[in-house]
Image (tube, rainbow, N blue to C red; front, top):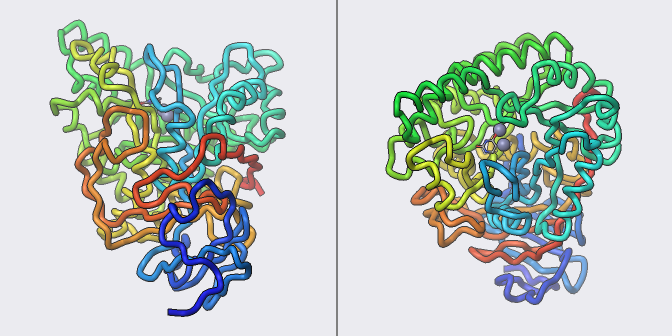
Length: 477
Ligand code: DUC
Ligand code: ZN
Ligand code: ZN
């Protein structure tokens, strides 16, 4: 073993109590980028990556040196779709800003995007500022917002500019729910988005058909969680995705489709991409792992989310779309609810709060898929970190391991095995849809801007450490 001038780091306990923005030299690891895998050392200097190369040596006496032989070194994941402390379904999602970002850190996700939901009549910048006031004191890793848009009447449309200037250039509309927007509002947003250098994303399902099917099933006494799926079947999502793409095309605008779950939607996106439309597609780990059969299980209520898991044909199509590049990003739609709240719908699926956990499981799950050969490790990095940073305008600091970028670094052991259990998780929720899932490989350490936030099962971060990530889009450049 080489002699190092720096102190050899055995475990985070060596450096406790809290030390921020350490100088770290990770030796002998294998770096995974979105395009390649190579043996290299990596050196951090405070918050930033200083150097990537072979035979690096510590430059200061307080540099912590980690031997990462046999380990992968990855950029921290970026989860661009979470709902933290979100009022929804008669309650509030059970992970607040601290719990959600603590779970994120422990899953190798070092940047979390949350939805700031506009109130009617509120300027879009005020929406962001209101949310930031609540979140900033609690976030344990870096965070960004999308604005969930409800109202662009009068002058409100032009407040998009203020939000973009503040560093929030992404806006989401829902085609469903009581707070969803009309087709006209969605269309108008698409028509103006490029001029504002903004990106519109959409939750695409057909509201009217869902409403019709839901009423029909309830009137027939069909109230179990399986009817949640049957009331939002494949064609409901496919039709809405197709409609949304048509409007993006008509406006020559970009469009980001969140949580894609159905085969027809994937085909429509593939076709649009072939035609040169600037469509981005996201899926979530639950649509890659589960199909609609989960709604026949005893714990079916725990899997109720929207869109629901679809049939096996769709699941296979989503896996293929991930492999072939039709899907650009993987994110979680993390929106957990307590078991007692899920229980509200035991006799009526309409009363089950929609949403599942996932922020701690996404990166380990995607890397495990890589270990199984379903995708490459580089593809896992691409969809979980590189592409999210690129699409949503924070690639200057996030999404890759290069000198000058934030030292958001994951040390990953591909030989470890890990079984997900609720006890091992770091969220405030009381169950996980990933219970019992066996993963190939697992994280060892996670650094957020050079600060150790996770070490072998332990959260090492701190409430309030996370910082707002100011973004600017480059997708139109
Ligand atoms: N779907 C969910 O399941 N939960 C939160 C919001 C959403 O669109
Ligand atoms: Zn949604
Ligand atoms: Zn969502």
